[in-house]
Amino acid sequence: MSIWDRLGEFIARVSSSASSGVADVVEAVRTVFSGDADLRRRVAFSVAMIALSAKMAKADGIVTQDEVRAFQEIFEVPPKETRNVARLYDLAKRDVAGFEIYAQRMAQLCGSGHANCMMLEDILDGLFHIAKADGLIHEREGQFLHRIAEIFRIDEAHYQAILSRHVNLGAADPYVILGIERGKPFEEVRKRYRKLISDNHPDRLIARGLPQEFIKIATTRVAAINAAYEMIERGLRHA
Image (cartoon, rainbow, N blue to C red; front, top):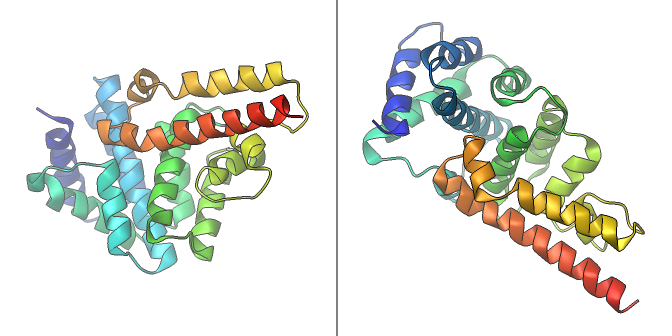
């Protein structure tokens, strides 16, 4: 049975409850998949992405076709399961609980409990991918994403590094992308670069519970890291 079959069954079960909200969804993920940690991670990531993208759409007020396509780039949902995914999306969008409560519960469900948790960064990166799909990140989307980062305990410097992979921040970009201060010795820059590349190796992403489709999206993250490193290296070589 595929993850989408299991997820479809789970969504049907949760959405059949008249009182289903974020607390019910999170508790159901914990209990239904308690015997399989790997499957629970994968389901938790999917549920978090679906629910928080619904909350972001509600905050922004509209859902464009570009954003729908961006969502489909992260999740290749089988046709027979699209209805169930739409049910979870609508459940989260209708839920009277605010997006901050959703973010807090999803952080507890998916996160490591440590600051700058990689799996929570993956979720934030996915939300950025959807938000920028129509060509720009709107003000309300930007506010939403920044607040999600705060709740996820992603510090400001780390948030700026994530943001810079999606939005051009100007001349500081390469250093911001690598999350390192300008003027640091090149050996420190190289050490930071190698760590980022290691953290984003496909095997690490799969171990964190990301779907195969997200790994394709994550290649843009690696491309930004490579480009930033090469730009810094060229600049120091010609200095």
